[in-house]
Image (tube, rainbow, N blue to C red; front, side, top):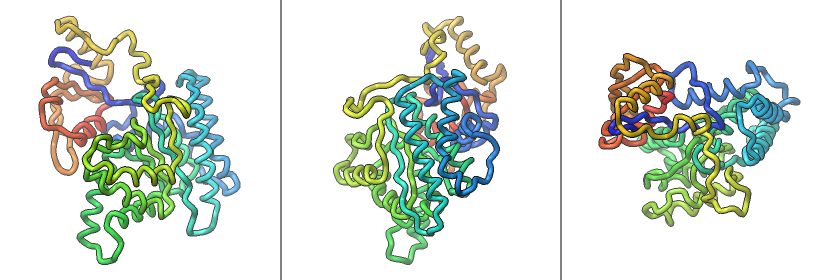
Length: 353
């Protein structure tokens, strides 16, 4: 929302309805997303699952999704339902792999889920990840935002190059190490805009897939649209796209096969906000009062104070009006300063709105 030079910034929440805020807002976005998925998705306290029951892991996820529909927590969506089935089958396969005694386990193909913003991609991945963590506790798994993931990858590559003595490339070695640490890797919002990322993707993911890592990722873009119009895209992306399709099922959550990839879907983030609208205008005392009321209802406070956020790899971002669950910014604070994805990621990790 924007009001003259005052705006209320709402981080993206790909949910089929408005979710309640997580309780521990001081944690990272990754951990908060996990806690949110557990709150809505976990079938109960984690229990040790017998080998014979692991193959039915997906059934619990299907049941949880149906309960959410029956309660009205989610809006029935055919494509979402079909995606839940695909993810449930993937859980079953991962459960079967856990039963196998062989140390060298075959790679279980993952899922690349793409579609328009607000279509429920992150919701479904969190649903899947919550059940994977609770039903398959011995399966090393991680759920992380793609930008945060790549920041850590570049740091690991730098360390690898300084200490490496073998013949394996540093990038592929880091990929192999990641696969050993995470047999299941869930990457949210896979978006490539940096040539430094594009240049290493093939080697990095090849290292992970060669070691049997299953990758589930979400994106606003189809594989063919990743790093669109980027410098030297023709050099880096065709190979990665081919590898991605070979190791993952590619699914458009908005439309069935044959429909244009750019077909827009329903934006569930706006559910319940029709009366509030998107903009509060014109700039007036009444509009400012409405904005202030909305800010407080979203978790702000009357006495919003200054707060300093840590931004990796070692910077700081000052938030002038910080509440318990929400922050308010002047337009100039966000859009006329030299800020990048890490800055906005830090804001999204700290606040619900």
